[in-house]
Image 1 (cartoon, one colour):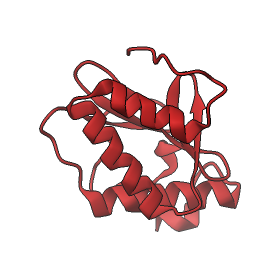
Image 2: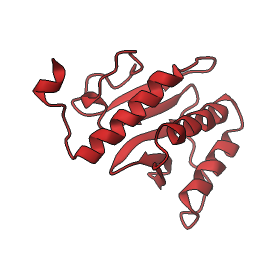
Image 3: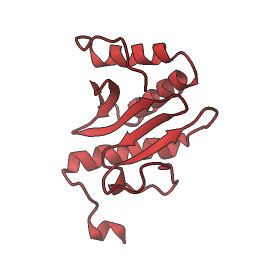
Image 4: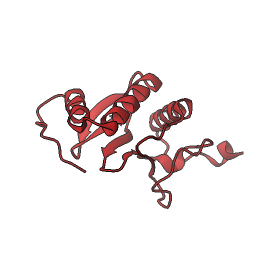
Length: 138
């Protein structure tokens, strides 16, 4: 992952925009599209800049957006507790807490399913629970 030349004194939204511009290729376009989907799914989302990467939060971290040479990785902080009927999660599947979506060049993401995951992650954070109740699994 390439480190940004961004200054930590800048607002997070500016740092994220700067990262997208620095990428200047399919990864920047993908991260920009994901950013728009997150904001559309959760209008109250807060953009943050942590660990030199974009972070989207709502009562806690929803997901991070990392860019690598061959992929854009979206890591959901509490992804293991989310229902994923469309099977968007395709990475970090062995952990007990996080789940990730790796997007490679030329791949499309199921936008309605992704927005549903973002909304679900925000609702989970707002509820204060880290795991779905056993009753919710029925």
